[in-house]
Length: 362
Image 1 (spheres, rainbow, N blue to C red):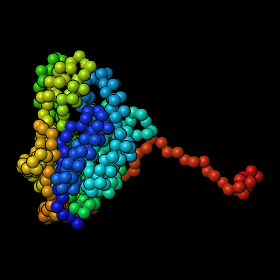
Image 2 (cartoon, helix red, strand yellow; image 1 turned 60 degrees about the vertical axis):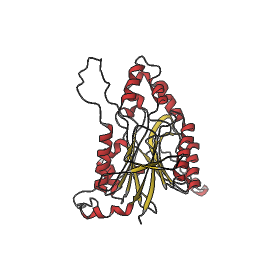
Image 3 (tube, rainbow, N blue to C red; image 1 turned 45 degrees about the vertical axis):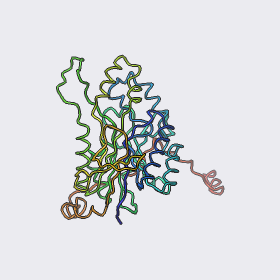
Image 4 (cartoon, rainbow, N blue to C red; image 1 turned 180 degrees about the horizontal axis):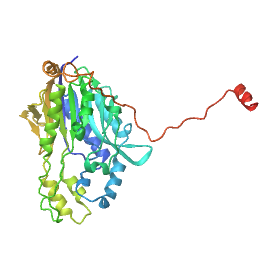
C-alpha cells in the first residue's frame, strides 16, 4: 500500500550540548509540524544533543572537555528524552525520525551515531546505529552494526534511513532497496569543513574545501534514482551559540570561529524517484502563509512536501535494480542484523538433584 504523506523536515539547530533543552525544542517542532498537518517529522543527524564538529577543527589534545560533555549529554535509546519524543509522537499521531548521539550502559564513554524511527503509537519502529563513523567522527563514535538496516512498512509506504556518509555505502543502500524502500531519509550535519582558509602551517594545500551540498545531493539523488524512491535530505543548522562553544578555550579560537561562520551550510530538501529536486514549502507560524522554496540552508525552519509514494512504481519499468534488472544468480548479499555486544555471559549449568547424586558417584 502506498499513498500521499506530508513530510516535515526540520532544518534546525540543537540547543548545543543540552539533551534536555534540545528535546524540548524537538517536541515544540513536532507540535508545530503537526499543527500544519504533517504525518512525518524528520530531524537531522545526532540532533540530540549535537554534532561534534569540533573534531574537524580542534586537535584531539584540546577536546577532552568537549568529549566529556558529549558523553554526559548523549542519551539512552530508551531514556527519558526518547520517551518524551515518543509521547509527543503518540499524542500527535505522527511518525518521527530523529538523530541522537546514543550512550550505552556498559561503558561510560562508548557512543553511537544513531537514528530512531518512532511510530504514531509511540513505539520505536527502528533503531539504527551508523555503520562506520566518517573521518573525524571516529574520535567520538564507535562503529555500529547491521541491526537497523531495515525498512518500516507504514500505511503510506516503506520508509528507510541512512546517516550521512552511509549514503555512500552501496551495500547498505542496496540492503534497503531490496526491502522495497519507497521513502529514503538521509540525515546530515550543519557544516563539514575540511580545510582552513589561509593555511599557515607551511603544508602544501592547494585543494578546495569539500562541497558539502553537492556531495550530499549527489549521494541522495543517486539512491533515489536507483531505488526509485523519494528522498528527504535533512541537515542540521549551526547557530552562534554552537560556534562560540566550539571555539572556546583554544589559542586559535578566532580562526575556528571564522571557519565555522564561513563554512558552506548544509541544505534540507526533497527529491523525487528520479533524483530530481522537488519544491517544498514553508509555513509562516504567525500568518499561516505558505511560501514555496526548493531548499532551506541559511536559516532555521521546517520544510514541507506532500509526497505520493505510489509514484515510485513507474521507474521500476526501466531499472528495477533489486528485481528484473538484477542477476540474483550472479550476485548475492548477506546482511548480519545481530546487535553487537561487548560480552556474552552463560549461566552455570544446573542439574536436578537426582542427576547431581549420580554425578557424585562417578
